[in-house]
Length: 153
Image 1 (tube, rainbow, N blue to C red):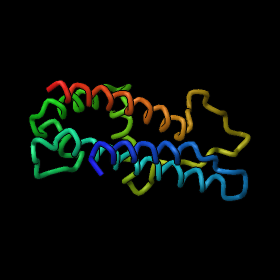
Image 2: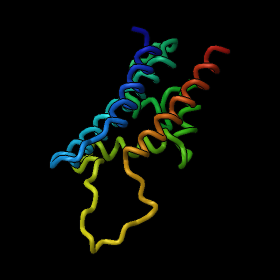
Image 3: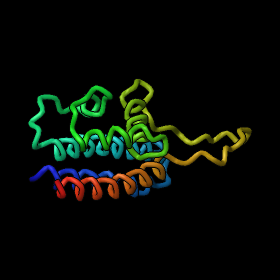
Image 4: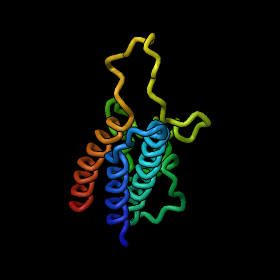
């Protein structure tokens, strides 16, 4: 399988996980958290696959996204474009890298919904699954544009 195919496959699988209904039994909350964290982990694998895809020609020794997207990472146009995107607060890549830091922490990223009726709901809180889906779709659009630019070179 090519890097491009693998990237597409991982994005598709992450999207599938995000759209699976968690059910309504006593395990629904735990299942939702598992689905969200699993989808996020697949999104990380897709990012790694994308980076391999756009840097194949450079034959880099280091392939970890943390290194490739660092400010002092390899000087490649495709990587610089992604670094610039990562610095934009509203971008999918900025969101993803922040969520991946949380995913790899001891607390994780998925949270149980607050069931306490005394708590005031915050209207701006968006469920992780919805954020995941929005950012997966944004990533797919950006990846298409990145691939077009790479083909032009």
